[in-house]
Image 1: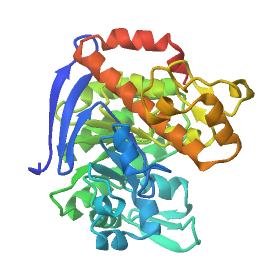
Image 2: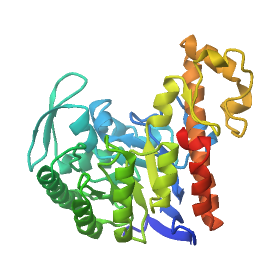
Image 3: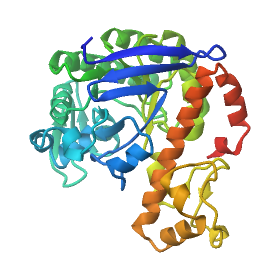
Length: 373
């Protein structure tokens, strides 16, 4: 393992086995469990780094595919890397672009070499290989980089899921061989679709390549949440103890609680900013659709128990006005609140783990309006 990275478990909950840990990176320490806001195109939509700091974000994500397409990874490298380019001095994780080239782009062909696809911007043809994914991420300069993997959709046959898993493992070896920077750590990705046998096999064969972190991909792709929880339960005994476990693309309040309960340490999701732009907010009393007429004369804050800038300063009536008038500030403030809510929820989870009462916390949360956020 690179001297630039380290992970240690600070406390394991006696009720549940969930952990609080500390991940050291070149751009600072991350206390886990952690929720990571998504800044797909080198920005968490509509929010400045100062606002993310106020929300107490400790790490954010960016996307290899989108930054390769625009403005180009070489331009970001020329600017001094992603941290300097976007003026964010805390840790950054970049995904490999694998999910996007399978789900967003017009896919031409998958071969053992890589994926040929057409740009969602101009239709131009591109080839992503494991080596290309590594080259782009090394230019971007994120602290944590992801292996190039093949994600399969819910409903994929066992035969096709196995083929994708085998290809992911072969690509992982090529990613490891290509990687050259010791100020970046590579997280390999476990695949296997919804098949327990494939998930366990993938995990056991993937973990030997993990230096200081391992990721679980290909979940929350349309399957019922109960299936995802069953798979996490199945994998849990085989997960490494000495490194963080990252569940990719999952981050609703109920999934945060259920995921961290099952031994996950890191999660991310675009959900908080996406629903904010549509006028929807998380709260301690359940989800609030601010544009609704019920809030026209409601001069109370979004959430009395939240200390974010939005809740300290603005009423539901004002936020409803902004959203219905299509004013940018409305979506910005709801985005700030939603990210703050998820980070504060994660802080509450850490406190419950440290107090050895996370099992009690989970039961209380499941019976509260928050579980329906």
